[in-house]
Amino acid sequence: MNHFHYLKGELHAEEVPLRAIADQVGTPVYVYARATLVRHFDVISAAFADRPHLLCYSVKASSNLALLHLFAHLGAGFDIVSGGELARVLAAKGEPSRVVFSGVGKTREEMARAHREGILLFNVESAEELELLDAVGREAGRPAPFAVRVNPEVNPKTHRHIATGLKTSKFGVPFDEAAALYARSRKMKGVVARGVDCHIGSQLTSLAPLEQALKKVSELASALVQRGHAISFVDVGGGLGIVYRDERPPSPVDYAKAVAKATAATGATVILEPGRVITGNAGVLLCRVIVRKRTRAKTFVVVDAGMNDLIRPALYEAHHEVQPVKKRRGRAEKVDLVGPVCESSDVLARDRALVLPGQGELLAFASAGAYGMSMASNYNSRPRPAEVLVEGASFRVIREREKPQDLWRGEAL
Image 1 (cartoon, helix red, strand yellow):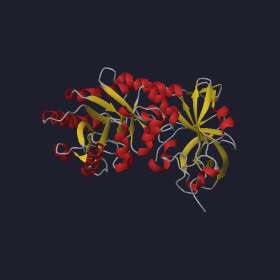
Image 2: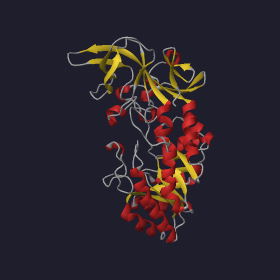
Image 3: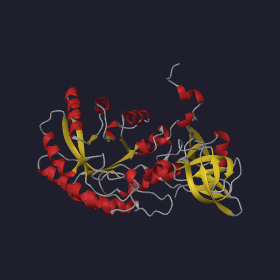
Image 4: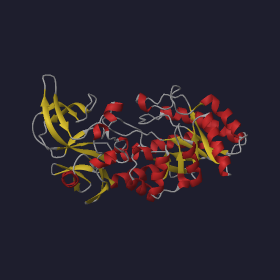
C-alpha cells in the first residue's frame, strides 16, 4: 500500500489532491505520503520482532530532515556513508549510539567526528581504513568499535551499477582476507571488533544470493567468537527490492525469516539497513508538461522535471511508472517523456503508452521516494525541487524550492 490513489479520476496522496500541491508549491516537486513511510517502517520492524535487531534507516535513500526526524521518532537507528549524513542525523535528533558508518572512503576527520559523537559501529572496508581508525581511536583515548565489511563474492542478480558483493566491486574486504584483518586488529590499541558486516547490493528480488552470503558471514562471525573476539552484531545490510513495474521481491516476513535462519547460530544482534523498501513507494515526483514535439521517429512530451531532478532512469536505466494526475479519455500512443536538460540521456521514460497530455497537464513519476531527491543536482544551473510531506488531509513543505541565488551561494566574482 502506498497511499497514492485516484479519487473521482484525480490522483491523491492520502486525502490531498496532487493538483492542489502543484498549484500552491509549483513543479517539479517531490511528494511523500507519511502514512506509507510509517506503515513500511512498522512492517519491517514487526517482521524482525522475534529477533534482537536494530533497524538503521539508510540515510542515502532519502535524507530530508523531516523524514529522518520521523524515523528517529519511530525508533530507528541510521546507516550513514558520510560526515554530512551524520550531521543530518544529529540535526534531526537521531541518536548517535544507534548509528553505523559505512562507505569505502571515510576521511580521518569524518571518523574522528563520528567517534566523538559516540556512534555504534564503523563498517571498515579495507586494511588501510582500519589503520586510520586505529589512529583515531588512539588519539581519542578510547577504542573505536568496528565491523569488517566482508565481500562474499556473491552475485546479487541486480543491476550492475548497484551490485556491491562481486569480487570486482570496490566495496568490502575479500572474504578470505577478513579473518586475518580481525587478527591484526587485536594488536591495535585504537580499535575493538564488535561485529561483522555484509551488503551485496540494492533492489534485491531474490533471497537466494542473500542467504548464500549470510551463511558465509555467519560462519565467520562464529569463528571469530571462538577466537576470542567479542562479536555482538551481524550487519546484514539492506537492499530489499520494491515494485517499480512487475518485480516480485520477497516480503519483509520472508526476508526476516531468511536472515534469522542464516544468523541464528551467531547469537548476535542483527543490524539491518533498509532504505528503498521504506521510502521508495512512499514518494512521487510531480511535474508539468511544457510542450509536445513530434518528429518522424518519435513523439516527445517535454516536462519541467529532468535528469537533474530524477537521475535513476539515466543512471540505472530505471523504470518509473507515469501517472496522469487527471485521468483523460482517448487513444493511447507511445511517447518519450523527456526533461529540459541539455543531454540526450535526459529521458525519464521511453516508449510509454499514454493519452497524449496537453500543455500544463500534471504527471506523477511513481516510486520516486528513494534515490530521487537525495541524488538531485543543479546541473544546467537548475534549482532543485521542493519537497512536501502529506499527512491525512493536509500537507507541508519540508524543503523549499531553491532560488536562482542559491545556485551561486559561496561563489565569488
